[in-house]
Amino acid sequence: MISVSQVSKSFGQLKVLDDVSLDVQTGEVVVIIGPSGSGKSTLLRCLNCLEQVDKGAISINGQTIKPGSNQVKSRDICQLRQGIGMVFQRFNLFPHMTALENVIEGPITVKKIPKQEAVDKGMQLLEKVGVADKADSYPGQLSGGQQQRVAIARSLAMEPKIMLFDEPTSALDPELVGEVLAVMKNLAKEGMTMVVVTHEMGFAKEVADRVLFMDEGRILEDSKPGKIFSNPSQPRTREFLKKLL
Image 1 (cartoon, rainbow, N blue to C red):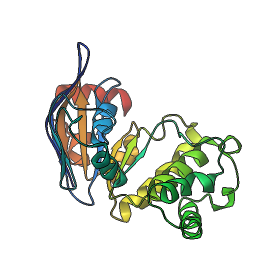
Image 2 (cartoon, rainbow, N blue to C red):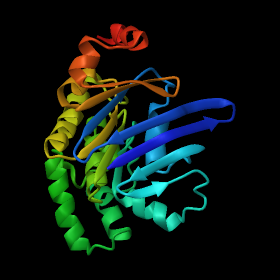
Image 3 (cartoon, rainbow, N blue to C red):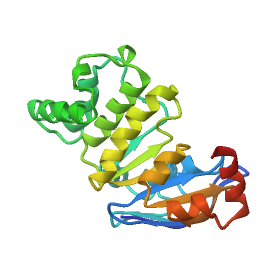
């Protein structure tokens, strides 16, 4: 479903991704861990064409994006993004729209779905993430956990084949983290292909098919959760986990 081949990315003199290669199979849940500044979020942003790679290639569901993708038509990038849902640290909901309006905006505007059909599907999705009773509430009236669950419903409304999560719980109060992770666990059980950047090691242990450890723009370790948490092969991974576990 996802193939990343020898991808590098720099911002000025700073090399953020350094020859990264990665494959993600359909239905697989891959969790990426590592210190701040290791390139985790930039890798996700490259997968969704929010950043252009300097070198290498990314293939999503058979569509390949290469460097200089200014050559890639914006129409193709839009089409690729329609198959990818992305949930950010900050919820990025439209503040002037209700929860339901946030969820149905994409299907109506981009996919040209009739409004009533979008509303029916939107309510199903809000029910799925446990906030159907907040359909008519504005983001400012919702807790952080509720806003993030609406953001997940909004992504799911576009019927993506892949979901990318960029530290989706890092902006939440600790007591709200569990409600968002529960929604993500259910998505994983349903077979959604997911790439998750997180510091929630319990989630990684329980849900991930594979855990990647990144540092200084490189993937240093790629293992099953049991292996990486109990007996990591790299000293840098051991040092990182020792501070967290």
